[in-house]
Length: 272
Image 1 (cartoon, helix red, strand yellow):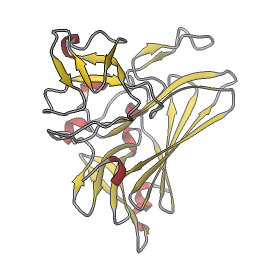
Image 2 (cartoon, helix red, strand yellow; image 1 turned 120 degrees about the vertical axis):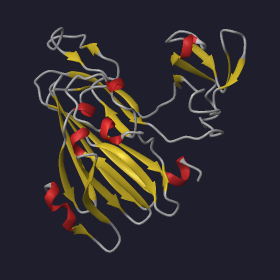
Image 3 (cartoon, one colour; image 1 turned 30 degrees about the vertical axis):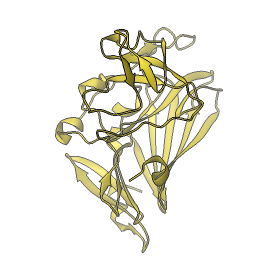
């Protein structure tokens, strides 16, 4: 189904329609409880997720949508665009070279992968939006299916290997959430330490080192509550727990498909 046909996909309980955001074609899915907006031209980026009852926006919004959603080129640096919304990272997060034959050394994997800077084709079947992206750096095809089920956002993923060789890749969901002062990050009780990816001035240590959770000690000796958001400018760190998360390192055998599902329960994820 083309974007021009979307306006006719409407039922008494839910709707799928077309709109324009900062000169971009966008698709809006609304089931009465939630309203989700995606931009196919930005790799199927989810730019908005709103709870209709309260009008609350769950995703970080850019201060200048025209700049954030401007046309991008393949292999641009992710940081050159205003970070916002919910992107997909595949086949890598950090820019790197593919380490193995037959794709090494000529395959350079771009910053945050291919999807965010590529255009996706779109298909609408009932209440489900399917976005398909061809990966340029490796012979892969990435498919994401989005649907709303009451107060749950369900995302189904599929990666297809189009070559005769095995392909290794990394996939990571990349949602940036709207947070406010005094918000709390809740991890499972068994998480006692996290791995530091980055912190301002390496105050929690170098990349790859670990620190305790939720109370950590900075290199200066000062203790800090990592699970508390003091202000948007104070919490400047990236850390990962060692529990299963929305990140996967996988190998896709030749002519094979890898599938995964990811559901977000709004009442369970966000206490609003």
